[in-house]
Image (tube, rainbow, N blue to C red; front, side, top):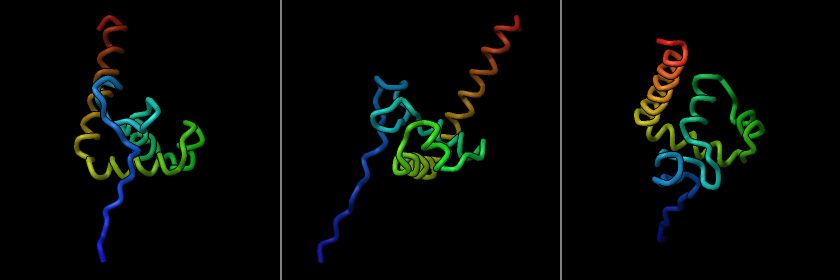
Length: 94
């Protein structure tokens, strides 16, 4: 029996799309966006799919990628949060 590894090509990293951060193919939705919604905001995969016009397969692919690259994606989420906080401080004269 010849085993064949099958891949799901749903996540892409392209320097011309979202600064090379991993996104769901055909969308601008980053893996970190899906991960943050799920992990930090308690949204279910069904809710994410409906609210963002994604299939469940796309959501689960993003979550699978997140779990395989958790440290990297968590750092990306922290960097985004830091940038938002810095922008808020600048806007408030900080």
